[in-house]
Image 1 (cartoon, helix red, strand yellow):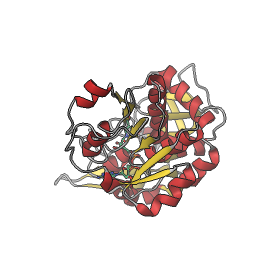
Image 2: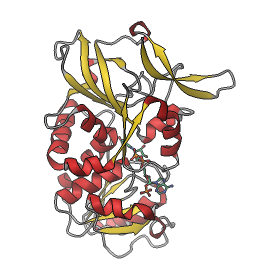
Image 3: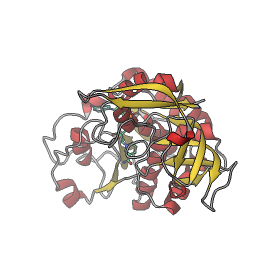
Image 4: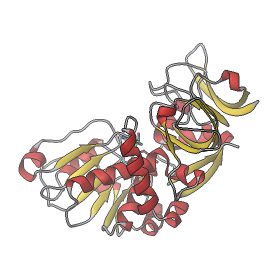
Length: 326
Ligand code: NDP
């Protein structure tokens, strides 16, 4: 018997989450069984611990969109018992049972070896949010980061915290947008040189072009903020669109694309090809200072998850939650 966070749905369609005991026989089919050590809390986890947001297909469900641990049994030639592995994406924790469990059974195709230079706890301090932040920075680099500050929106959240620390470590000036002024010291500690109040950027676009300010942007917020930011990008600069914490709409004009050659780059972490996953994890190990990562960590256990799921949906989680499932 081992512990897992099980989400059930009652006849009225209401979900409830609690730690329960299950057995290996309860786990779904898959070729690799992993003894999970750590998982995390991402925005999507908040949805899947709660009402599901349309992501979860079947109940009972085990959420947890990422985990790191040790292979216990494997029918996949690439992995053997004792190997340390990491999983992000592939709709694990949504369409498949995920990492909020002391054991998980998955397809070997979804795993990557634990990146050298990271332990399993650090890998989950990074987690999907940090891995995605790295993909976003890599996309900006591929298109050329212009002079001037790089803007990070939703900066005190998971994606934003890791993006801030990586960009600062790479030598960029970082302007961090936050709706929580009390996080200013935390964000400066991660390397932000400028704090921008959320209110300055979440007004509807009135003029399609404003003064050119930002040399690049990692955007975790979307909505009206992204629309405003597009009109403030420097000529030829790029925005990596990662998230929708502020809304899925984009009430913008095409003028910044046509008159300033601004690039809007879509970032998806879920279906990333294997080679690019390895490249991103290698970059994380190299370009994310571990003391900065540690400063982001809030430790948790399985029984904390129902409350943490609600908090992250309200934008109240700071940095990265690391869940010790044991
Ligand atoms: P977090 O909740 O940790 O961070 C989101 C941050 O956005 C909050 O901390 C807050 O930052 C800010 N925010 C919240 N609500 C609003 C609002 N209404 N208006 C403006 N800002 C707001 O979530 P994650 O970092 O885990 O994820 C961020 C986003 O990225 C989510 O939408 C998530 O779904 C998406 N995502 C996408 C991935 C992909 O593959 N494309 C992978 C991972 C995440 P502050 O308090 O500093 O203002």
